[in-house]
Length: 316
Ligand SMILES: [Zn+2]
Image (cartoon, rainbow, N blue to C red):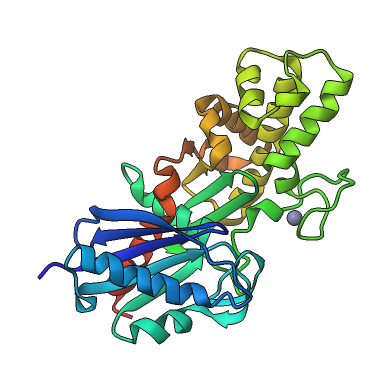
């Protein structure tokens, strides 16, 4: 009898649904549904359940054929519990219990933070996955996920791996979304990259035009040796290097994986990060490699499915 699992990536605007074969992890179906924007955020689990039933029907699958449902959400999670998730209007709620209201107890449910899940998925998708890996995602925000001894790290209340809020820049005068000043995200998130570049454009010659400035245009210009673009890109690489060197002295992973939209800058960015990382790291940790994420948009679905699969293997 064939068995199946779902890997579901819940974002602020869309929910990515993926149906996978349990044994070989082959993707059978994937599609998106809009994230409901309601005062009671828990409605999302009803929507997910209904969508699973529809998808099952399309593929002639019974609920009894499912071994698990893995879900990631854009907020800190500890054992399924979420204290606050502004993007989804969820507060003080156990998400595993919410999902089980619809699925019952027979199907295993795993729910974790999206960047942590992405780390799990990206690492598992490498040619030879590591037991100890850290993913840093560079996009609108800066996220992170830590895998140690093959397990995801949530920390004691769910903030383990919130790499974007490591304080790396003391001179910052703007306040971060978290309430602190000088977070990695303020320098390396999209807004930080654009703001810093705009500031420098006022003072320096550049081929960049302020009116059509994007992260991509900045990285493209840096590759052509534009002086302002190079300043921005070096700044990004420097502070990721510093943050990673701090992480290495804490958990010493075997690999850093760089993902998110900004990572489309490719090996150019990886090489620069590596340069600054080596300058700031000590002992043999300077040799830890940086790699580009491979699965991109599917990392959340794949990681969620793999996480719930690991629960089955441990037979929780
Ligand atoms: Zn912050």
